[in-house]
Amino acid sequence: MNQRSDTNLTRRDFLKTSAVASSAAFWPAASALFAAGQEKIRLALIGCGGRGNGALKDCLQAVSSLGMTAEITALADFFKDRVLKTAQEHQVPQDRCFDGPLAYQKALASEADVVLLVTPPIFRPRHFEAAIAAGKHVFMEKPVAVDAPGARKILEVGQTAVSKGLAVCVGAQRRHQASYLQTKAAIDQGAIGTILSGQVWWCMGHLWFNKRLPGESDADYMVRNWVSFTEMSGDHIVEQHFHNIDVANWFLGKTPKQCVGFGGRARRKTGNQFDFFSVDFDYGGGIHIHSMCRQVDSCYNRVAEFFTGTQGTAAGSGPVNPSDGKRVSVPELQLHENPYVQEHIDLLKSIRDGKPLQDAQWAAETNLTALMGRISAYTGQLVRWQDLTDPQSKSPWYNLTLSPTAEDFEKGTVKAPADDVIPIPGTEPA
Ligand SMILES: NC(=O)c1ccc[n+]([C@@H]2O[C@H](COP(=O)([O-])OP(=O)(O)OC[C@H]3O[C@@H](n4cnc5c(N)ncnc54)[C@H](O)[C@@H]3O)[C@@H](O)[C@H]2O)c1
Figure 1 (cartoon, rainbow, N blue to C red):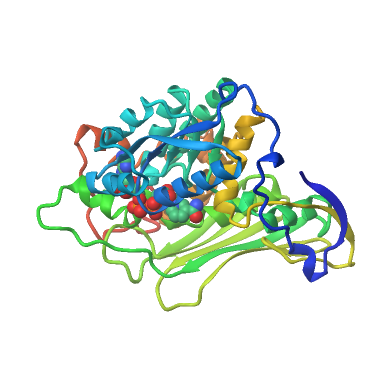
Figure 2: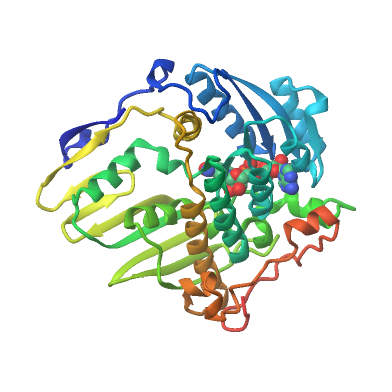
């Protein structure tokens, strides 16, 4: 599907991509991973919130662009009203709707071929493990964990998925977006030489804060307010800035060796997250990426990536500017204009082709990178890659598990951390 052509990368039309490719004839014959002749894909959604509803619609659009049909076998959410709202929109019978902290198990017991895991991040490792154990192909949103043991669980279960031939797609949509794929291809062709440094940004306003309702349980409060608690989200350097840190790891083809960062809180009152982070990621060999993220209203916004190489510069989504006007070969991509749909097309196509996507490893590695930055900012210490990945490092952060855990929600033992109490660098172990 990808023709190649010589392109002058300094021309503005470098980033022009073809419009939507939607014909079923575009796709190769069905693979053995779908039952022979199966035209209907069975889907289950776990987490019927903003992105869950969006991901379901994106997946349904991908299904129809492949000339297939879909059946929703199960919907699951922590809260009954949310699952019923999604059910009403898609006319899913009530006996396929499940709520509560164990609803995911009922959804996984349905006949779904593919499950969409779109809850807050705290639940991802546990739900991913259960989904792969149940033999499901998985789409899961980023981030994939809130602590290092969770990220390592994703790595481990990802290996099981590989051995079972199950597809895993992680919602880092830049990896399915033509402009990013073309920049990556150009860099791989040497357009800007060797990357020496870069900056990645997610600076924007706050998401939302929910005040505690009278008599509300700790568990309900934390689920409703998950973007305010590090235990639920990983903090926004993990939850949101994941995307830009991922572009750095992806373009460099490696993970950092160590980092030093700082951050703080100026505006928030609920939960325990920082408002801003600034982290220097050291990839070794003199290569540094500066990561900057902020969730504070009425400030300058920027969500982007930029790289400086020995022979030019490139923004994540282009343009690519070789210092010597060099011409390199890049793919002309026929992708869906919406990368959120394209990621589902790529997932389903990978299953049909018998070459299942295997995103768990790089997603866990990006997650670990963001966690390094968060831990460094919270503690004020230098954090090494091996602190989170190597038990021999004897690092206090290797086994650091945030509490409450996903299991606490299932057991009913959730105790919410105090609002507005945050880590103080130089004094806290994590
Ligand atoms: N790729 C992207 O650009 C993008 C954009 C937005 C959100 N996201 C990610 O999607 C995920 C969900 O975010 P959102 O914005 O939809 O949040 P949301 O709060 O709108 O929805 C989360 C839903 O999950 C439900 N839930 C919570 N715990 C559950 C459990 N244990 N079992 C079943 N359901 C549970 C909640 O009740 C809620 O309905 C997050 O990981 C977020 O980072 C990704």
